Length: 164
View 1 (tube, rainbow, N blue to C red):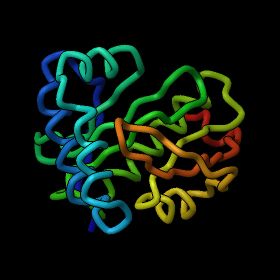
View 2 (cartoon, rainbow, N blue to C red):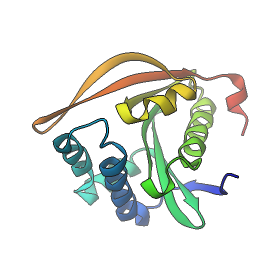
View 3 (cartoon, rainbow, N blue to C red):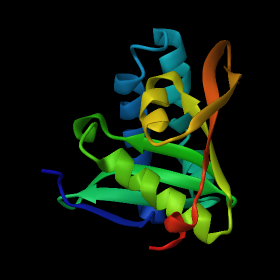
View 4 (cartoon, helix red, strand yellow):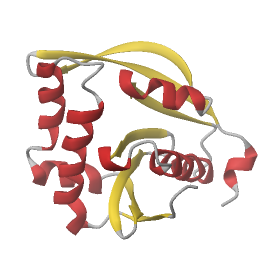
């Protein structure tokens, strides 16, 4: 049975918790697909918590709570770009990512987007493919001296996703 997941807008006070969650998610869940140096470079994106907080505030960011504890977050850039979706490792494979992704799809549809695009890490491709996102192209992301691969994936949004 799935746990009850509550969603709410991210608050400025959430930024330190979300930065910690981001680092934990990358450090634990991406290890099988990326080298140690790549994981460290990726996780370091949250080291400057003020800049990380500003990035979250510049997008529509929501958090998922399980039992009152922040279990994940996602952000929508503009109307049609799922910019971030991260789940704390302790809550992985428990419906948190699905709940966040469904909410972002509905939000994008409410903003009149016809499709939702995401730059998807290798470790998350199966998740997005199962949600009917189609791979479009392979990308290289440069983080300091490291290069990480990801894949642009797109999901066409239907009218049914426009209803809350």
